[in-house]
Image (tube, rainbow, N blue to C red; front, side, top):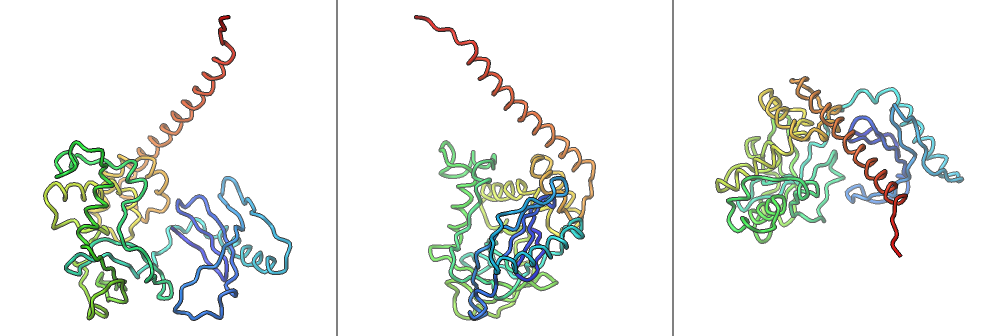
Length: 311
């Protein structure tokens, strides 16, 4: 997610093409302590893309809304000048990690850009995500204990696997990541005494946000298949070395629609032919899906006009 923010307004994009602009009144919570994170309700100023232009949200005839209008207009003007500057540098350098039973980072749960946004009252179970549950498949499921021959999907099993590794009473900890990749321990949830203010080296943090080692052979294959399935999103990372980026670009070709959605936010593209081939495939698949929908509509129309009735 790339964000332009000013005063009480934000312009947000997840694809570098379509932007949503929201306004809110931060004065509503100005008297609340800084250490208490509070979300204020947001009003949709509008949506924008270079192709469609600005589509305004609802307009409220009030003095307060006029103030919000000014904030939204300022962000909109900035957006027009800087929308091609994406991807913006990543600033969410404070991360919430689910810990394994040895108190090491196991899986990334959340991230924040500033200390006031750290959540301590939240669920800390790791979830693979809805898209993963629907679409992720792995040959490892054929040999995983207790899974072969069942209706359990790979994403569901992976979710169970990770949370089991966290133990019966899972713990999580916020870390402030340093430029060298190390992390300074901050507050946590169900955190054991003495773990705050600890410093962990970069090697203790899973590079792609989920521990890859320490599993059985089929479990490890499942985890690595999942990370490979995430290749279109892994390419959004700005600190990938060249071999990793080359590998993920090749893997991403298997998910052409996701590549086409994210490629504008890739900080670097090494194999432009591979990425372009994925985008062409995505366009062909969308055209095919559109044609199928049109054919289905015409088929229904034809049947309705050619009903044979027998009395």
